Image (cartoon, rainbow, N blue to C red; front, side):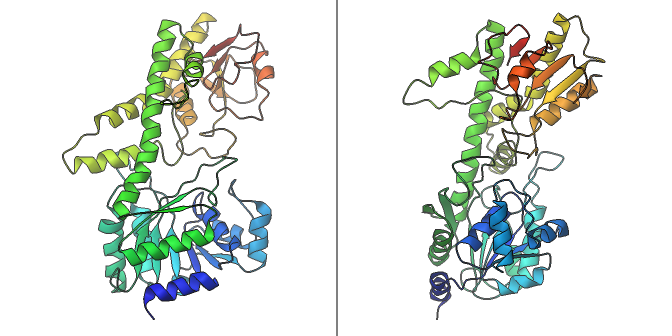
Length: 414
């Protein structure tokens, strides 16, 4: 029986053994969804602490339901290990590892390379490997494929299938989770695309869209996040201009979004954070230089967003000056450190850069004592902003969460 027919039969009767490499914000929810849809799943991670937590049913990811994880582990549908020799037992493995930037703001693909090398040692004929980590176009074909082929002695397309399917995870989103978000698949060869598409169709409650190659799927993911980066850069720049012109940018946005077509609302803030939007444009601009191309619009938006923490500190200095208080020695409360509302994830959070800038300028960043200034950097819904705004302390609201508060004597907005 051909590889494709064998794999499709296993998908149909749910005997396909699934694997997930990397049990973080992307990998663990994906592993849980695979197991919930009736496929026994093994999670692989080099961090023994994560492995031990999964195997005891202890959840550490906000988008995973505690009871679901516990039930799947207890029933034997989901297990975790740091022993990559078990890769040889799985039929399908998704690589969901971080893709950060190095000290020079260039792609750091070591986690992809290390995962690929570990998988290659145990790769066997008839397996499927899918990269989900966000990366630059051509990674799957030019970086991942050679590692897998050289380490296994097998040939992609003949002995094993390889593809790219970008993760689409929005932590804290109450509507769209891994299971109900449409999936993009690009693979090397039509048979691989068909099989990988069938796998995701079987484990997700959403549509699967097949594109012509991994490079298209990789670029699609970069487009998603660069689109947001550019538009956030635009609105941040307009926010700075509106402040100089004494115009309320938030009111401007509310007015603009009444138009039913041609406009999507984006909002200013102290910067951008998370594992995708602040990083992905750097991946694209780095790759573009290989072709002698400079992504000028993208790079401009990146510069605007990167300097927002400095702008926030500058605005804070203005507010403190009005109170005849110097920044050096001032006590400042940063209210909200996570990179977005109602989550605990602070990766690349702009609030951390704001904190560093305050400390560099001699301010004491406080959490519980008497403050000279409160800066709202993340709009968590669990905070009593009425209490914050009426405490008699200057408030610099970077998220417009105090917009309904009537007494605005002590409030400045971004």
